Length: 439
Ligand SMILES: Cc1cc2nc3c(=O)[nH]c(=O)nc-3n(C[C@H](O)[C@H](O)[C@H](O)COP(=O)(O)OP(=O)(O)OC[C@H]3O[C@@H](n4cnc5c(N)ncnc54)[C@H](O)[C@@H]3O)c2cc1C
Image (cartoon, rainbow, N blue to C red):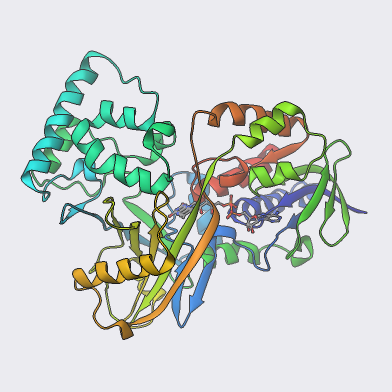
């Protein structure tokens, strides 16, 4: 039987950060360096891997690193040195036949005047109501109506979020959006309607990214610090005995551990354990998540989408909700005079792959961003099984049952899918750091 102090499931950023920071701490407490990482795939990095096809670099849709915490800024600098660049966001929205700035609610200028009028009046009415009584919303649509008013809700928030989440905005709560949804006040909305652009709105006005190699260059640099002898690739846990703190692996080995850090999706972790209490089984059955279908495009043409890095497409006549250009953000992500793009398919529609492809090509042509079909050198469809955790009415109760139960069994379930959250790469790094600091 193998023995380890800390057994880590998953070699995405959460698992990598956990291992990295345990090794850092082992400089003064050598026993913390006793860890073993189990990764299902043959390559580390999880969602932060980069596929290279005919010289085009494709992350698993846009993966831009936004750093808020000084400890994580220092970590990224320790790992990457000067091999990171800072990029200013250039995102737009395509709606009602107009290209407007992000976010919609703060940049109504350029939309047809009747739409601007409707959105502005709704925002004014909402602000008057909010001044009289604080927002008290039970679901995301209700929150948008109370915070932004009817126009912005109907014209953008509902159609866009229905495509993203794959369900009606009444089915989800507003809790996911505290950090990620810009909430301009009436003065900012009015300024935006008049054409005064505030490019700093939102959490992601700037981001960092590796100079070369795509986002995987970052995961690979962290992995480069870890001894390969402590990493098992192409291996999965197949059974866990929480009481004995033993885990059986797909290669037949059994591992005795003291702490278990799991960053694999929470439902997958729970399936590995036997004899779970009924309440835990019930809570696990309530976890909901969207899957993601997206397409990669390699196009032999410079600056497809002009200088736009990603474009939100809320309207239902398009079967996708966002198109991004990797190479408009970081030129090294496509060969010279070429562009690498991704397209995220709407979750509330069920178009065939061919319908999406035809629609994307037509959309690009309509904007003069694509000429002859021969320009398309790569066009492929990919899937992410666990995409966005759905914050429905069962979300908090289910998590309040599951995570404390697991902690009681000596298991820390961390990361975007381990902790079952709407979280960023920095959050994943932070989870690993905090676990190591806590030992
Ligand atoms: C479409 C999309 C776009 C995103 N864009 C951004 C962005 O622009 N900026 C940003 O900061 N964040 C972004 N994120 C979030 C970011 O990707 C995640 O927060 C972060 O990468 C999560 O890291 P993780 O290690 O927790 O999970 P993962 O990267 O999912 O890693 C989990 C690892 O566990 C492995 N695994 C799974 N099951 C098993 C098993 N049974 N046994 C062993 N191993 C297993 C997987 O192979 C994987 O390597 C995005 C997420 C998505 C889905």
